[in-house]
Image (cartoon, rainbow, N blue to C red; front, side, top):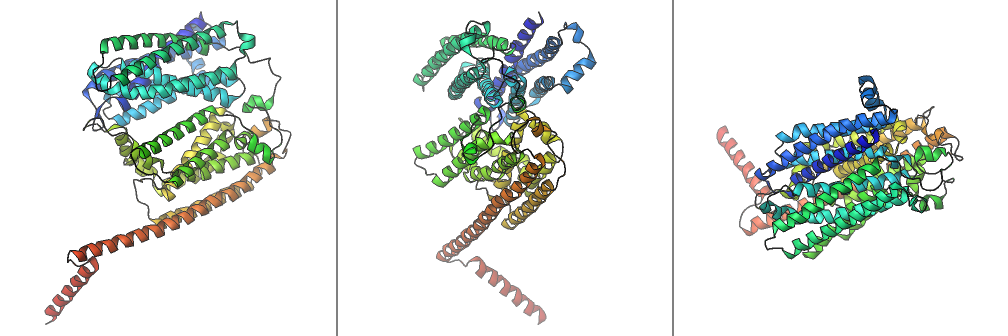
Length: 619
């Protein structure tokens, strides 16, 4: 009985969360706005967000209690004890993630009614995505091997499915005159989401299941049913998209079109119910139960052999979440360059190469051999840290992705719509962006976080879980991108930082980084809270020496990118001075052609007039 109620509560929670995310997505990017303010046609959708968020919130609370009852093997009434509930949501990882999801639903429920700006809705949309994926890190995929593959593919699968299903649910609430603006843009999004759903779902099923031995199980039948329904949904989506393309510029037969969409929503709800059942049941294991393996149990992957150059460069353990994010970034970048080429504009090939190198190094440091060995050795972890935080960001920043986005993102569909491009411009000019791009703030995040991470219990705690390791990698990348954007970035910056200040900041970063590395090399105890010892690795047995080697690597690898940034800053300074000189010269020539004195001549005349007045006063 508890198991059935748990599955039902998960279905309600999933449906509510998908509807919430889809409605927020539509309000943020699909529906027409009026100079960044929600239009009157959005009021109905805001009420839908309140309803779905409320449903999500209540179902999440129920799901916490039912999950606790299922774990303890007790009845629902037996777990209604405040002490037991507090222990579950504050001390148990699964309870913490479920509680976080509940808090997200509550925040959206109480804030959406007063929100009027699309920018705030976009932030709520991002928060809702975090709420949806949080429990995945403690799902059945997290308990199997190949954490990065299984969890990453499931996260991508759920995100894509959320955007596809949730967006369609939200769009069903629009009036025909509004759908004409919304459906074409959603159709493009749905196409990408469908591709991600199919690919990530296939990868996750392959990683978790062995259909040769589990073909006749109920779990396999449910998976097959879900696959069939997904294929049918893709077919319906294809028909919808085809109708939209054929009717471009003409009126769509909205009643018939809405009937097809309604049928699609019903099939999606059935598919969600099957997904809720799958998430509540342990899948058949892939092959025989493996013998205990400390590395596999702790790190999620088997212990590799002692590192060599060939093994580091050839090893690969796919982190599907990071790979999905990188593919998405590359797809957007390639799309932007294609748009420029199609309209006859140019884009420097050097920027494209720089961006590609940045993406490639991120993949190598997360899924490649460097990322693999970073799980098992502190010295290799530090190499990966330096690559993610100091080498890859330079390539990304010099690729000028923000400039490319500003040149290629679509303009507003009406004269009053701010649109996606306008939303990006507003974010760049916001006070939050001005605070983040302050050189002191960027330096504090870039170098200050080193001491917070490595000289507290955070490092050991984060290394114990896939999500902690993932969070560290994301932090390294974003902190590096922010810092080098402020120092050597070619993208628009909300504040203009003088070159001399940039050079001072770089010298400060170099000094702080050296101090951190020396402090790490001088440690007499391990800082990993026993993580590397728990792996029982057969090579590099002196853990403290490996930690000291990591400090030396951090010092050596950290100085070189900063020196490169110093050279780049100096070159940019010289170029800016040259451009300013040429600008002044052009201005002088233009004024001379008009028979007007230049600025210097005007200033000299002004000084002469002051001197003449002084002589008159003396007389």
